[in-house]
Amino acid sequence: MLFDVETDPVLRSQILERFAAELMTDVERARLFGLPEGCRIRERAKILAPEKLKCGKHIWIGEGTILDAQGGLEIGDYTQIGTGVMIWTHSSYKQAILGETGRTREHIEYKQTKIGSRVFIAGPSVVLPGVTIGDGAIIQPLTLVSRDILPSEAYGTALEMRRMARRIEALEATLSERSQASSFSSENSA
Image 1 (cartoon, rainbow, N blue to C red):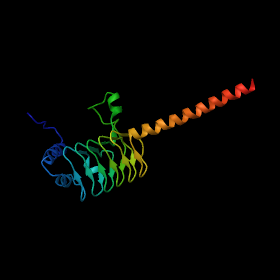
Image 2: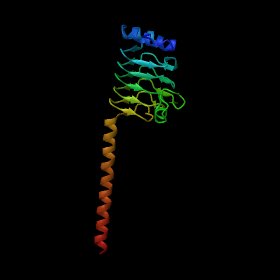
Image 3: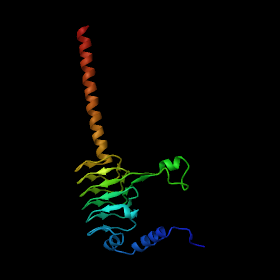
Image 4: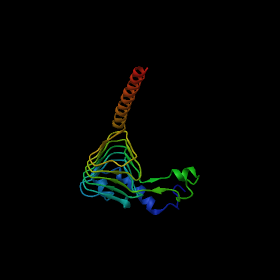
């Protein structure tokens, strides 16, 4: 038989729903997934556990985006989530390293993830479980968000690398000054 007769009917319904969604407009697709007024969701975007998604109005969700709501996901009004973004609320690494993949869900960790209002997340980026992104924050492309982001904060891999380089330069300058001061002090005491 082609189809597994033991497949959960809810899962089968979700699969058929996703297939039908590919033939719809962004607005029709958002309506199909039960998203609020003014929301748009592009092709191949996927919502895991949509019943646990609390979504604001006028959200734009890009192509191929994955919104994992299994641990609880909140997204505020007027937020844009770019193409290929992955927002996670669960992690199964313990299940994998314990050799339990496909046998039990006992060691899967679930953490609520919150995305504020008027947030821009450029794709492709990844937001890890349990992270909160404050209102008005900007996430740059190709960023792994592994910590909470403050309201109106701009955050990104390239931005963090530049900040780190400036801190290293400042530390090196301080060390150089101290080394020179120490050398000067040694010469004067001799």
